[in-house]
Length: 216
Image (cartoon, rainbow, N blue to C red; front, side, top):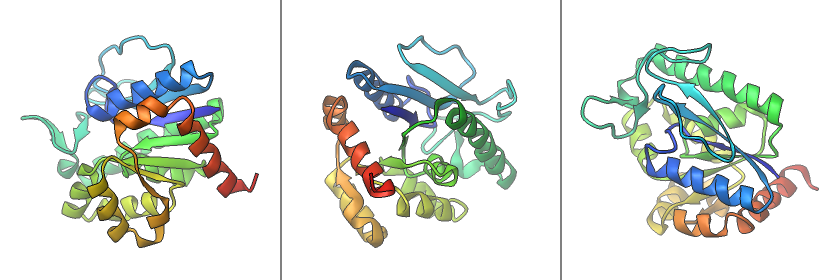
């Protein structure tokens, strides 16, 4: 199965990034074909046994590069928060990821997109028309609640996801109350559990989503 794993943090820079690396390695070892699309600080990334594509932040390198630093939900001192971005920067961020995602879909033709966070990547996956699942971590909902510019994008990503894997039970309850129409598609799936079962159970979930989407 061809799986495009999508995140907006480098693989070494966050729990979600390290989770993506673990998923990609497990899928590869089980005979699947993973590819990763994520953001980069503009430094050289460690070599991985799977393909990694990046959107460069903090220097504007390349046609998809962004001049501003990599935004985060809770940045370290001096870092850029998603709440700090201007309307123009949000548009530039989404457009850079959209262009890169479109290229990956044309070149890789993923059967499934698995995006970290119920965030802009999930909404772009929806716009692409590709089947997708999301992993919800929690900080994205606090950010969206604090900034109404993001709320419609988060709502669209959640309401159209094939499945939402919440990292703990408290988040399952929170999401079920927030997205009542998606309650039956929200699962509790902690990162360590998902990583241990990624070679077999995660592709089985992907196939279920594909069957529901296409009836095959």
